[in-house]
Image 1 (cartoon, rainbow, N blue to C red):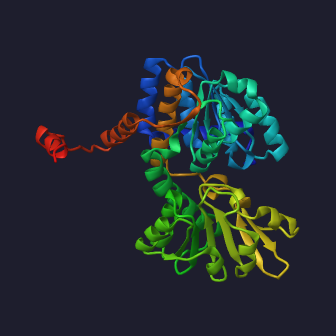
Image 2: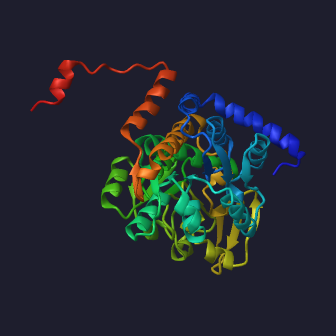
Length: 410
């Protein structure tokens, strides 16, 4: 948090929000349509995304379209000035950068008192919390949209077990989301965040990417582009083969542990990196997560050592009983969100536009949909892609009658 007075912090954040808006033409065009159609007018929309300038623009766009917008975000994922700038703009904000776990829980309770009709979530944290602690609210909700692969995975389990009570649009499953946000956006921003936080270089270093989903592919690609030697760990043989064909070495984390210098956990699955893995790693190994959260790392074991020392802002060193040191970035949280500015503006313009469309879809169709996981429609994907292409002055081939006939003949 800045030492500047609160007004100065909010003013600075407002300028950063405006800067992000300049690179978000798709969301701007969608905002105009949402406002004209009026489907969100008077609805209460709760946003649980990482709170930074780009997501602030989504919140403001929904407010402009007539919604009553409230925002909640965990402490380390909150940009303090942005929170205060949104408050100044008339939104209800339940987020503080310095919040403890207990304070976060208190803020979440306040957030749910706004009784949102629609939730736009990250990691399904708010959706799950609502089902556990606010079942009366869930009964009245129209639905939700989920940003992350790990969040959708948890919601699918809830649905299979019959406990999911609302329809949820899986934004993370959209091609617009995982092909651009996860590969290009998260891959770039996590690698660059690591470099900014540590002031190290990747060239020549042995980097382990745990998980070769969309995020893992992006991290591996950007790390390799900066000269790292990349090893990929996978449980899926086909994804492992893809990593091999992309030019990376494929090896289990257990086998590679003694040699790796930097580990990016990119699975979205709890316990992907274990105590046993860490105990086999070399002195000074760096651990971080990309796209998921601290649950992927053995933070319980490391914190129980009682040796944590902050050796550099956002870099915590732990001393193990074997006399080795382990460096963890951003307390294990997704490092591009907890200690950097997240994905590039142009990429988030696409993903947040999907959320805007999802909110409108839930507003118009939520009452008619039974609980379950729903995809983003191909029409919305096309609309977002076309809006960005128009802004860039790109043109598409015309589907002629001859081409159509050729594509539909045998």
